[in-house]
Image (cartoon, rainbow, N blue to C red):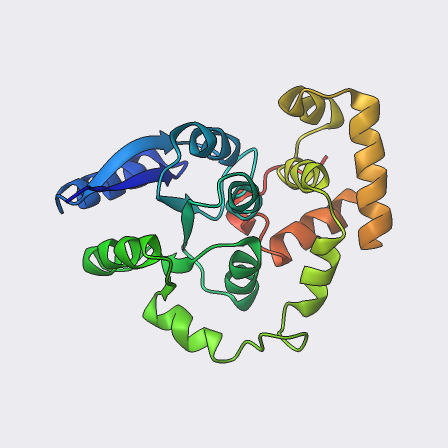
Length: 225
């Protein structure tokens, strides 16, 4: 039987290696690549065309939510299985909205992780037991707790999402420009658009929004510039 091809996107080396060994022991998985940040995950997904992507939600440069959205658009055959240490409603709802086929807590058993990869590869969905219970409280329509956050997110372009994450990670305009390969004035323009669209007018506010929307985890936040 042909093995299921998997791309692992996780910025912590020990965790990434753990998932690799876990899957390789099963015999029916083939790890085709490993990514240390969201931007690398998108690039490898386009190049390697894996059937399943194990995607950490909080990664540097480009978070798992935006990386999933880009992969879903450019590589529709790849099924993304989101990984997180948190099961907050905002994280789960935003993962689903971005196109993820499942959501696993990092403390999920090895058996369930392997089972989840097999299930999403078939085009079905899979959620950790605790996440499944939380989903019962999320309205699929506009009444879900994260509705306001999602409406605001829908107004942002992919580039604006990238700039927002780098701002929230404490990057100055010059650093953001360097990371994205664009001019400082362009970064300033994106920053201005973000503040207008979100009706937030300072860096601290943008950072708080990024955390509340699950774009970054509070532990990822660095220095507010």
